[in-house]
Image 1 (cartoon, one colour):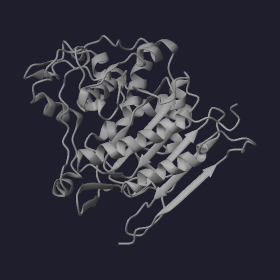
Image 2 (cartoon, one colour):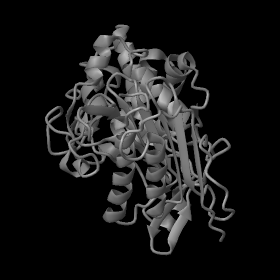
Image 3 (spheres, helix red, strand yellow):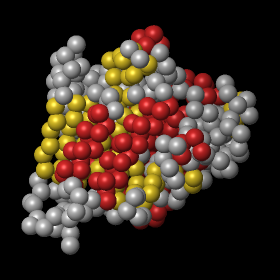
Image 4 (cartoon, rainbow, N blue to C red):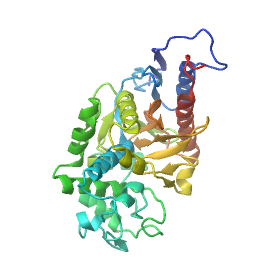
Length: 384
């Protein structure tokens, strides 16, 4: 096995005569990507966009452990749960148009679908689904060993099948709206509601309402394809010592919701447009930013994190907060962040998930969170 290590840094930044103490934002970005790679993450790419539109990109590690090919700063990766923000944006656009209400129940749109073992769609609203306060169990299939990956990687599930898996379980131990528990199943139901209300699959509404208006031509729905466009880094999953598996070749279990690929360029553009008001009326954006605390378990990943409607609020080390929604699926883990006004944004995507131990998970999460925090707190060379 040839292990290649390459670091790429490009920045359209004019140096100032006097620099503030400490590393420049560009140098800090380079250090932060290398720090993530040093944990054992095979490949890392990051992009930061300043308020004036200037971009800095950095990459570290290798895109392919067999060939040593360097990581491309414009490489594709699976968007995973970051696509929940796309879904939430479409739902809130539809609310602004009067096509649905956040207080509509699941039964109003999907009668009888959420039922059994204490699950009751007449008590769960669209708002609950968006905010993960529905209490519906997160019951998507998944793999925890190499054997399970090879057995399951090409399995295809219809949305109705995924909901049925959740209905086989009792709900979380709180009434809808009275607690918080992350539920991918809730977003499967939102996709189904979008289709029922519009007559079109959710991915088509996302393309029409978000991607095309913003020119996000590097964000694509791959359906049941197990591949990604080129260029892309190979995705790896660490299952334990000596058990690092290339998991690039797979169909996302929730192909309707999780089968999106994107780039750091497009992900930055999307979050900046969302937060600066180009995608939602002010009233709907304000609703999206009404947050509740996440569970104690998720607080370990997002300290003091709060969840809005498909949007996460996290504190900044320099004061204030930022907005984000990370995604992790099939070896790709991506963190992002944008300031409240949409002026400064950052995305870091890693092509390896070190998910074998809690310690490794937290190390990787904390290092990526530090990169986002440093990037959003950076002072431009022109800042006095």
